[in-house]
Length: 322
Image (cartoon, rainbow, N blue to C red; front, side):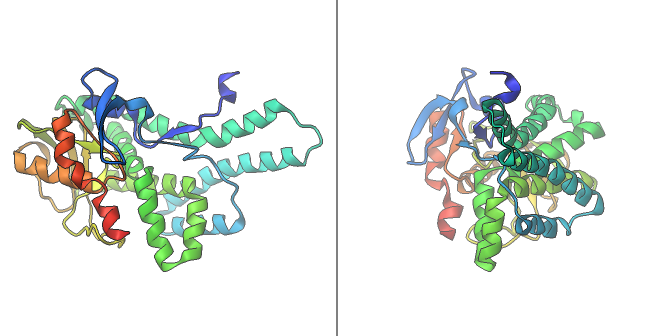
């Protein structure tokens, strides 16, 4: 089968290449499973759900809801949202025209399926590839790469999407909306593949636009403990966040583990000075607990003992809400 016709059905919402920084053999990592066990397993089968980003048919009510949420964004972002939406709707129109045509073919059906499965997945792959060299530099303590504005744009967009593209973020957002407006929650759930990408765009632009007002810090960990990560690796660690509520926080301190020895944090609170900062074990422990608490089902670690230390915290935020 031609590559363009191959539908990517296994959609990862955390980059496998990123998780490999917690591997000692370039394949396997220690993972706390949804049952609370600790496995040593390949990154390729982790944080993945079949058809997670597959396009669904949008009715006018879905389009209206998307435009309603978009309307709160700056004008330039609204234009981008609408441009992406038009492109996605072209696939829907082509599928509708095909179904109404008399002539059918396996190749046409496969091409339509591939488009529906691959479009959003390919966008996320592009963001990952664009940030790859930046993350490699940060994992070596080289923060100066972000002095280049273009690299800062790419990294900001990557962070925004890594926060918004996960299953955990989906569950929290949709549950929160359903509590206030059940019908809107259903609409959002049906078209989440677009909402999540739109929210990721917005957050990425916000991180970049506010870079001179917030502190950007690379945390260096020279302790005997390691940073861990999870299936929700980008989290808000600001003190205003309440783990047992679905309320939108007023502020954000974005925390993102880069490797067992480095993490990146953007602070509205200015808790850390900008630049490269060495942290002690209490800070490592604090952020590891928050990563585990805000995980959906899984945490990942370099050593079995790291996974064992924090496995009791996994999913604590969602359990409190449920």
